[in-house]
Length: 206
Image (cartoon, rainbow, N blue to C red; front, top):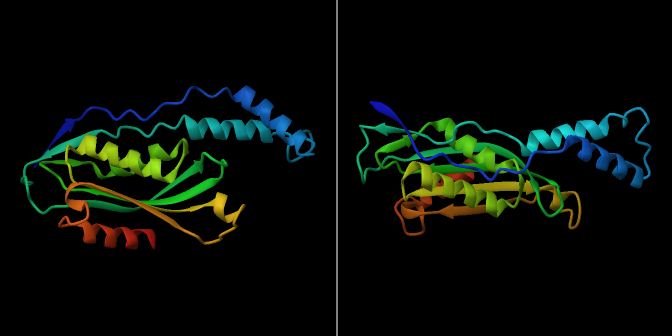
């Protein structure tokens, strides 16, 4: 039996409202600086389209991420785990504004309270909708899960490809970066450390 609770809302850092008119003007200037004609067919509406995309990306509303439930069948110190894998998140690297395609595996050990499963994906994707670093995104997800689940046992793994590595610079096509944040019983030496890493590897390989 479950009873809904509401934990303290997780407030993702909120950027200011996007000035789409100014963004479109800047992209028009960029196209001119790149030697393009922003008035030619194919480009004349591009600055406005890009401005709308930036607004959609940075003003994204993930919906409620703070819903939890009292779960009367769970008992403190039990062996129940909740792990969600294969959460795909798209974000932009803050160093080069290049795409990052990330796969997130996140889990926690319930302590008498469980999250709605969709909330884990919402938390992950909320952190993707800003200029990011993979490490910061991972730590942000872990911090939010620690807060909203009220459990000390939380783990997050992120595996991703970065266009700033594959499409420029070293051009390491196919290179993948994995980062892991583990707490409590998921930390090295904890009873679930190996299990989580195995599940995270399988989720990233999908």
